[in-house]
Amino acid sequence: MEVTKITVSNTIEAGRSKVWEYWNQPEHITQWNFADDSWHCPKAENDLRTGGKLQSRMEAKDGSFGFDFEAIYDQVVKHEKIAYTMTDGRKAVTTFEDTDGKTRLTTTFDAESQNPIEMQKDGWQAIMDNFKKYVEN
Image (cartoon, rainbow, N blue to C red; front, side):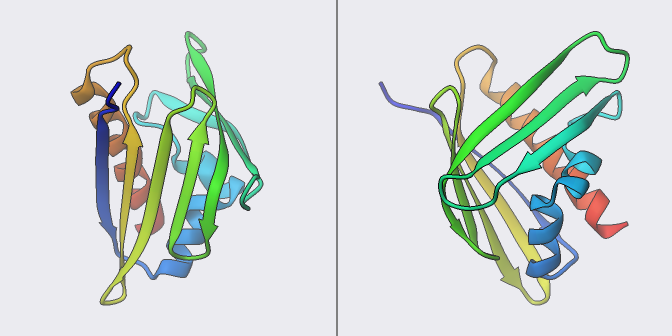
């Protein structure tokens, strides 16, 4: 079965080391890791190393819905690349590319089969847009 890959990206007005730090440190993850202002990320843990685990909790602020996100890192190349496998077996790769003092952040992930492709892309892009806003403010 062929897996559909979805790519989202953004150019962040910050250097790679700051973008790397804000993308990976739990105290920052909780500030941006949600697609909509009606949601939040009350908890994040990150053991950033090959074989380490990323865990975060995303919830609607009104308490009506929430879910846990977990993944195991397949590859970590500081300031350049992160690859992981989610608990359902899907894979994702995020790259950090220096572009004249800014950082091009790109994530490519395996689509899941329960939601439309556009909905998945829009959700992941909204999280990345939220990340950009957080880093730049």
